Length: 318
Image (cartoon, rainbow, N blue to C red):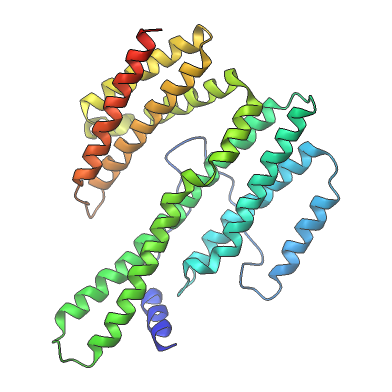
């Protein structure tokens, strides 16, 4: 208990950051929702019960799918608010995170069922897939902000420990708390890194309902918008990345024009992945406290460039 109190006090003293920043990828940010009851509140279960009742009384499948997305949006806001609280921990948002996943999964299942029943529902699938992309970006910002906040506490504690002699009676207690803080930072990093892989099945369902043409156009549009937004970072993006990504986009457009939607989608996704890695490296290098670009980051980017070259070779050989 003493360890948790010390951790809470340290987190209270750390400077908090805003989690309402606009995401740097996909479509514009979701409209902010001010959540009412939060996970951990005594009557939070009533909020969940009300949502379940509302869903049960919604018989139109399209409206129900949109309602699932609306509730998923509320979970994003709840996670943000909870993690802003002094002494908050990742485990405090477990229920909200799990419910977020359930809402997204249920929406995807409903849309797929309507498609199987013969409904022309590709536009809704595209709308919901875009929403999911934005939600993921919002959550990445939230978990990254929380991770950075905990990281500042970790740095403060390490500096404090370094200033103490080994026989100081505070060392043992501070060391134990530091281990908890480091573990918490790792939990936040795991949540941030796991978001992309966590919803692959739902993205796949939405894209199946969209159809090949709409899916290809969606990925092409996302890649082109990302490249346009990176214009301000042009001097920080390696020339070979700019050239490779533009080559991929040019060929993706050509594939889309001739109706080769699978190739257009593949090239667009490769361009977007490369640009995202380059953006992340540029943002790290441009922070007020620059992070050293690791060898693994450079290696990853080199791998993406080689993949782009193979993808373009495949395009030229078709």
